[in-house]
Image (cartoon, rainbow, N blue to C red; front, side, top):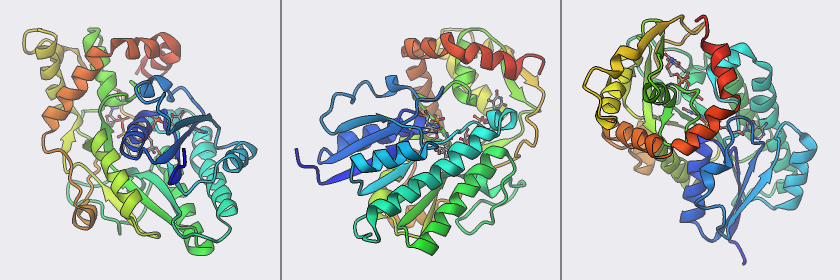
Length: 353
Ligand code: NAD
Ligand code: TDX
C-alpha cells in the first residue's frame, strides 16, 4: 500500500503513547504509523494488542539513547512527522536514579532531532517534530494563578529538569537550525494503561488488594488531572494544526488535592467492589513526603481551546469511574506487571517510608 505520510511515534508502548498510537492507527489508515520504543519497565506491547495487526502499524524496538540505532531507524523509514513521547516519566524514580532521565529525556531527544535534520536536509515542507512535554517544567505554584505558555521555566525535580532541558534543546534546534518543531506541555494524565507506580493506578491496585494507600505528606499537594484520551485528542489537533515554533499548554481545568482525589477514588472503589461506604478510606496512610515535592500545578489551556476548539471531558468523576472499571476488568494486565519487578520497586520505594 502507498501511504500518504509516515509518522514516527516514540514511546508508543507506554501509557500516553499507546493511546496516541491507537488514535492515529485508527483515524489515519492512509498514514504509516511506526512505534519506536525501547520497552523499558514502563513499555508494554499488551497496551496495543487491539491494533497490532493493522496494516498501517509497525513496531521497532529502539533505544533512542543509542545514536546508531536512531540513525538506522531514520535510514529505514522516511519520516514526515515525529511525535516524541519516549521518556523516563516517574518523578520518584528520578530522585532515586537521575542518570537515566538525563540519557533518555535529553540525549535521546537530541539524537532524534539530529536524525530528523539529517533526513530532511533543510527541505521542511510538510515536516514536523512534535515534542511532548509536561507542566512540571514551570515549577510549582502557590495557591493562586495558572501556568501559561509564557510562564518562566523553574523545574524542581530531576525529572522536570530533564524535560525542561529537552524543551530548551527543541526550541534551540527550531531557532538555530530551522527544525520545524512544536512543543506541548500537559498536566497530570490518568486513565487506562497507566503503570501502577503513578498515584491513581497505584491506589486502585492497593485498594483492590486491601493494602495501605500511601499519601505523601498531608495529601495537600494539588494536581490538574486530564483524561488520557483528551490528551491524545489534543496531540492529534496540534500535530495537524500546530505552528512550528509554537508551544501549547494542555490541562484538565480540574484541580484536586491528593487527599480529596483519593477519598473520591475510595468511594468509587467501595461501590464497584460492593464494600460498605467508608471501607476503602480506612486504607489511607500518610507517609513520608517526596523530597522537594511540588505543591501545586494548574494549566491555562485557553490558547489551545481558542485556536483549535479543543476541550477536555467535563466530569472527573465519570473519567475516574471509567478508569476504575478498566483496571477491574483488566486484572490480567495488572497481574502481569505486579508479578514482574514491580514488587521490588514497591518495596524499595515504600518500605520504611
Ligand atoms: P510512560 O513511562 O508510561 O511511557 C514511556 C515510554 O517510553 C515507555 O513505553 C518506555 O518503554 C519508552 N522509553 C523509555 N525510555 C526509552 C528509550 N531510551 N528509548 C525508547 N523508548 C523509551 O510515560 P507516559 O506517562 O506515557 O508519558 C509519555 C510522555 O508524556 C513523556 O514524555 C512524559 O514526560 C509526558 N507527559 C506525561 C504526563 C503524565 O501525566 N503521565 C503528563 C505530561 C507529559
Ligand atoms: O504513592 C504516591 N503517593 C502520593 O501521595 C504517589 C506515587 C504519588 N503521590 C502524590 C505525588 C503527587 O503530588 O500524588 C501526586 C501525583 O503523583 P504522580 O502520579 O507520581 O505524578 P506527578 O509526580 O504529579 O507527575 C505526573 O504528572 C506530570 C507524571 O508522572 C509525569 O510524567 C507528568 O509529567
